[in-house]
Image (spheres, rainbow, N blue to C red):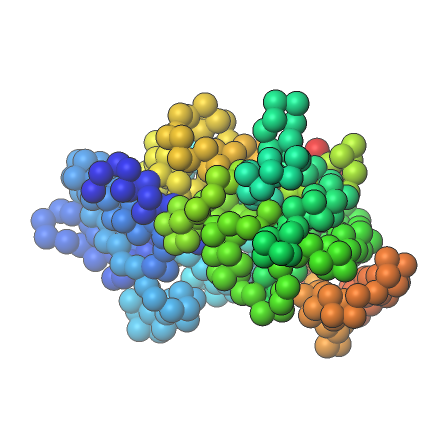
Length: 460
């Protein structure tokens, strides 16, 4: 496969790097070669991973007596792992979304306890978040890659509408007020042309277009302020109000409630749509899944006040949990060789070059040259310094209170005024905050302190 084809294949990213996979259980292969198994979901970077594992097996692995066995799994990875543990066939390295439970069961080992991983723990360990990557002071999934978010826009539509800079180039909006005004200027119903499209049928609509968007103004994600240990949805009201104003203006594609994210992305790629909230993985979508028939660009998430910029949301993806049973069977020296390979600068830079993942250490790639067709990928990566993954929120007992995404759908349908919005969200956050004490009463042994970080950075 040529480099260009690999790049295009890599661009099929529908999510950022989800760590590797395989099956087996650290069996010893023929001769003195030790097999290390990795399990992962059947991700967009499968071809890249296969190629890199072959390179490892043919070089480092051959020298050190290690063979990595990789198998991509379909279905719920944690269910598959649970079954594998009951039959004694659990993989040596894998991804899990049940880190806390697996630590408590003694199923996974800490990086801190694996000799030979000290350098990568020192480099990436500070990014580890409680229950996402670490537990009780130790790291179980080392965070190494990230995903960023922004506003994609149709350059020609902006130029045609006269929304340009001093050089006549398309000028994307900076604030939500700009988005509302630009959406009106870009809309021409007679041409079936609209300023923006919302994926109202998608279960991630609230998460991206409201929750992630508002973080660019406040640094607060999921309505949770890590500095105070309290919920705060105040500024989400202003973002919601902007979206509702766009709806009232008729500046978004009609029938929002019927659009899942894929049809919305396809419509943007076809043209006649001015803007859409998107993730860095959408570079691949607009390259191969729904090839863009337009010239498009990407800008940071819109903000409420250009003089007050929050740290906008970015994912932080962890590198493999380590089966605790594998440590003695395989040996720390061999496991650390494999882990160091997948966390190496060279591996992460190659992932970036092929449009697959952005290293959370942006310095690794900020000066890396990429082909012209990857310019938007490079721009998404440039958002890394002001994007961050938040801590998990403190636990709260709300007694069946609506989830924020369901509340947002009601708001979208009922179109309350800004004052009414503020009242709705104030009542919601009060219930969430009251639930914090209620949860503590019901679970007196629960320790909320890892989720309250007084010096957490909210603003850029």
